[in-house]
Length: 424
Image 1 (cartoon, rainbow, N blue to C red):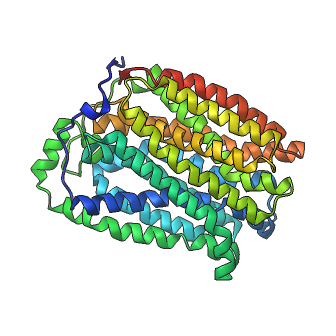
Image 2 (cartoon, rainbow, N blue to C red; image 1 turned 135 degrees about the vertical axis):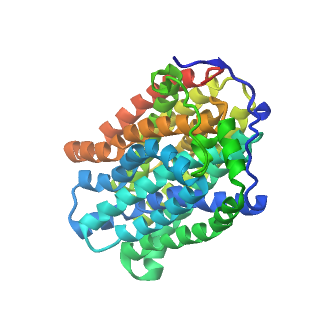
Image 3 (cartoon, rainbow, N blue to C red; image 1 turned 180 degrees about the vertical axis):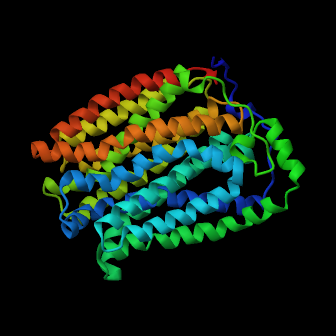
């Protein structure tokens, strides 16, 4: 059975397995550059959907798959990541994932619909590996500041998404190569992140094998140890734990709301008469506001023994933003974008914070991260394609937004349970 115990404040949590890789500044720079890539290539697509749709003659549902496929494969790839990190070490896995992400970005812009979706698959798997690897890495290297550092790297993810959303259309015009040149240019960011991560890989190779084995014995190897480290004990009964399922459901529904609007918000606004460039700016503004929520909410969560009110507040703000978008999609676009930005950034940061706050080790964080992100992204994958299909069926966005409003209420219930003062 899963064993629950009273949670300790995050600032008091100590895990004595820090490996002290490269210089802390290089480590932080590497983490932030990797995080910049983790949403940029998804957000960059949204202002380009109409152009891609015309290029390949896609239906609205098929266009939704451009966002759905990466999200779906985030769910499929997440459970495999702890095995990869046990076998190859977190440092190698992160480097391989970020370079694979760059390759997927390039594959996606080849002149073929098959290549488009194949690139989406590669991108989804790469992001899945990074999604699961990073919480364990942060918990290992910053054991006393795990919640704060979670806020820092989740904020950086959204900064990348903001830049991508705001620059997609200008890059299309500046590079003169259409949507392909605009989307393909983000592979450069992945290459830069790979180069910045090299010092961590080189330092990891220099660590004594006995240190890796010691870290494994202490319980962090499931997320971090190299080939020499034995497998650490699993959290018993994780997939039968109600707490783990509540965290997974909160992450899943919150992500579904995010990715549905990542796929369709500019299109929703454009369909109601807004200029495509302006719609892209509204979308970029929403991503920019998400930064504040993603940074502040995990910091607040780490100082609380229970986060129930915080989780419910984020779900309610999601509902308010969706309702505003439903009632006044053009005149209220900027207000809706601001409210949704706070809610979605805060929900993302809180969902990631739950992973470190509800576990007592890097190994536990990796396992819970694998489960919650597998379930969460499989749920989230329904959003973009489902929203597109409902739009195609009804000819409008009212039903899609109404169902999202209902799901915000379900997220509130799940968040109330996930915010209990317990750890796995």
